[in-house]
Length: 255
Image (cartoon, rainbow, N blue to C red):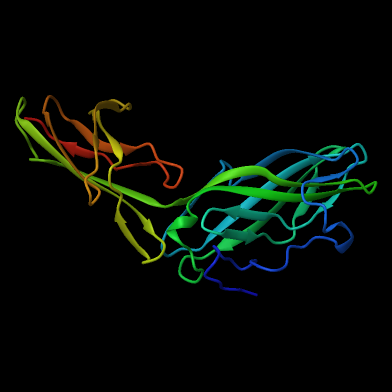
C-alpha cells in the first residue's frame, strides 16, 4: 500500500510509525547478540541513486552478513536521509554465499510523480539493517552503509559557428540543469565548475581545455581557438546531491 506524507521522501514501502522490529528486541537500537556481523552494504551497484522528475526509480539494496552458524534472514532495511527522508524496503531475500555468509537483497520504489520528494532530501543517505543468524544471534546496525540520493542532471553543449575557419574563434555554450522534485521540472544548477573538453576527430579521448562556472541560470559560455576537426563537450564531475554528467559531443568542421 502506498502511503504519502509531507515529512518524508516516500515510497510504496513507507511506514512512518512502523519499523518492523520484533517486540522483544525493539529496545535494541544499534547492537546485537553473538558473532553476527555485516560485512558489506551496496545500494544500486555503486552507492548512487539518481531520480528524475517523471520515471519511477527502483532502489536495490544489498547487505552481506556473516555468522559462524550461517544467516537465517533479514528484516526490512530502512533508508534515512536529509530533509526527514525515510524509506523502507520490501522483505529481503537472502542468498547463501558460503556456510557462514549470505547476501540479503531488497528494493523500494520511489516515484517523483506520486511521492512527496523534497529537494532537501538530496544528499547522503544511510542504510539501517537487522540480520538474524541460524543460532539465534542477530545484529541491528544503524548506518551500516551509505549512498548518495541525487537529483538527476542534464548537460548540453553547442559550438558555433559551424563550419569554422582554422584559427578563428569558436564560441561554446551549454546549460547544466538538475531535477527539481518540488516543481517536477529541470532547473539551472548555478555556480558549478564544469570542464570544457575537446576530442580530435579520429581519436577516442577527450582532453580538458578549461574549467568555467555556470551562471545563475546554469548557463555556460566560453571561447576557444579552432584548430582541427573535432568534438567539443562540457563535463560535470557531480556533487553529493547531483550526479556527474557529460554532454554529447558537438562536432565542429574546421576549414
